[in-house]
Image (tube, rainbow, N blue to C red; front, side, top):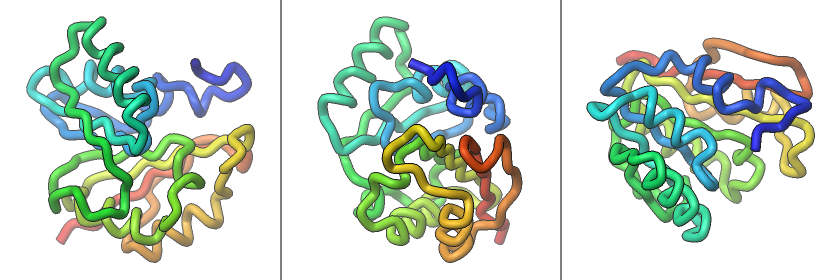
Length: 171
């Protein structure tokens, strides 16, 4: 469920800040039960694709059930951890990390892999809320993203609930 204390964390708000278009490819890292994967799949349409990635098979199972219940066929399910170099280069238009960055053991490796898998000009969107026990502040998020080569493009929210969008520079 969306957190009633923070509009930043609402799936609709996250999707709104991504400028998704039909035909795009989206990676939802740490997708959980599909709270953002499902609306992203609707937004990119049948010509697009969403990869719902999670290390927990149980979460992928729940996401798969929701997708089937809504007759969504443009989601691919991947059981893996980010930073394990399981993703192809220059594949995605958008990558989402919604309250998951703090749970990633090797954050630098994860952001390096995300940088490689994003197409030039693609957007990495990181959402954090202070209510999450693994909350990462803006300074840390910016430091990690800049070290991986990303350029900051937008900030939505405030210091306790925010989405930071970063762009992979065009070649």
